[in-house]
Image (tube, rainbow, N blue to C red):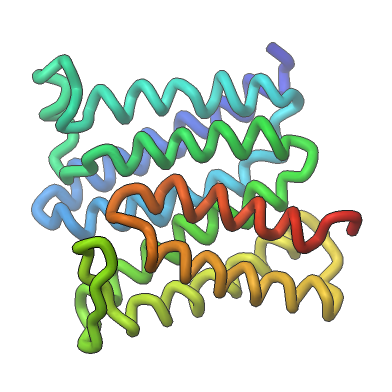
Length: 221
């Protein structure tokens, strides 16, 4: 494994370890808030990705182990003693999250800003939508037996768009009128995908479809 990959993996593991300690120990009395903070803050790994030197190091060494780890600490773990480690009740959401990370990291290793599009839409967009929707959502609607709110969906769009702009600034990508328009459309698209996706599966559909939507709209740019 390349030296830069070792550095990148080390930063990712240390960062995630800090988040787990924070959410599982410090905020264990508030499981819902704990889960959402973890969901949001994991998205910041997008800004660690430039440290990696190879596609395999980023996807298979940094991301794949978290698929196994998050499954083992989920309620579906075959090792029941480990399933109790996760006090916040993450279900399979984090497993899907790790799968999305792995797929995007491998496919778009040479275009990391596209990885950022999907992950930040999922982490910050969906994360803040859940937090604010649960607290302030008054106008609700139901899709596939999941109750959601117009307020939550609006927050998802409003949280996603500025993070996508920050993502492009971080990766020194040009913010032309066309690209800004594309980012607005992708933010709207991610919001609709989240609204129409059954609970839990949005950790797969939102990041993957948002990244691919950007890739399609900006193809050749």
